[in-house]
Length: 469
Ligand code: URP
Ligand code: ZN
Ligand code: ZN
Image (tube, rainbow, N blue to C red; front, side, top):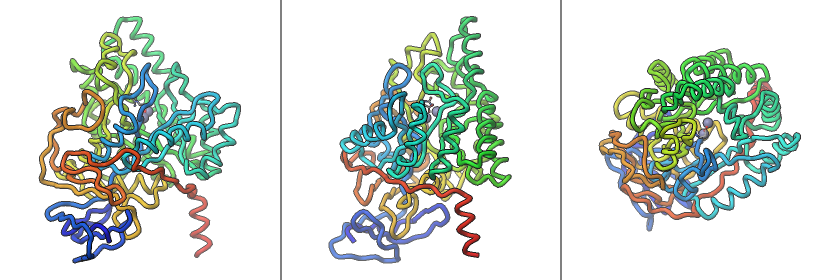
């Protein structure tokens, strides 16, 4: 062993117990009561919790969007992630008309090889099928470890939206090749209708961003997507769920036995309601889907508590203040997106500290489930054989979020002033210390690409279990 974490309380998605963890060559090699090893570095975690690193499966780093590029590079975004106890990010590179999946992924891999401070994987956004070439390419992409693809039902004028036919082809091909489709679900025509109406009426404050995309606009698209996934028997992962009615449609489908339909929400929807769009700085909260009313937030928390939501991830897509200011007098000019990657795990663990959920559930939502759903077999758990992606967490430490104490490149945060009960004190990425007491101590280029395995469909899983019985 080259590193031993001693005397800590290990928290997994299902257990809490005291034990030492022995690490060798970036992997957990022993868990036991009083581990010793000559020459190993010993870290004392007395009175601390020892958790698997979070996996933020929804980031947009250096993404061209909204007339600019999101403010965090791969370096800044993964540095900030490490400082918030995130040890893996899943980014969303975007394919455009004429580009192959391989081209897009290879160009991002080249950047990450130089810049990524923690491990990374990619879901590839598909915006154009290139006359069907993309459908043909999906199988080889899966062999290259890209086992999830994303579609947008929105961003029509930005050329990112897919139509229903394209969505159906992607769902079916993903099912065939062992992949999954992730979806941003909102109804584009309803949004256009409202936006045009509000513009004509001169209603241009951030509140009208919310009113042009209210609850039912998101719910309509959620329900449509769930309907398709159910009937095509294809896996579906709905990203950033923010409304009650759509969430209920997913929960209903799961209850009917559609186990390959998953739902993610984000901390911003759990913390803020649409009231933020009436604030003077409302433009800083503009993201899509927008924060919703109290009823939706209550439904999200209920599903967080009772197990109906699968994943909490961030949709980290920050823009600088001067870019948000483009929309000071016209909400349609505000680049959509907010910061969050450094706040995910602290926020959910603080919710555990406050008694809203258990620590096990926080670990399940932010680490174990993302690893399982997206095929990171070596991550998401503290067990022998897993990567030593470990967070040492002080449940007593009080921390107030401020842009000055974050490690991103953005100049403001929607989380400013939020007080947390508990905070990470150290983060290890494959056994290497990358964050230590509010300081980043990692290095760009340390992160490795995660080659994910092909997904097994529920039908395949069922066939295996019936062969065995
Ligand atoms: O407003 C958001 N969410 N921006 C990032 C792109 C997306 O829709 O996920
Ligand atoms: Zn989205
Ligand atoms: Zn997103």
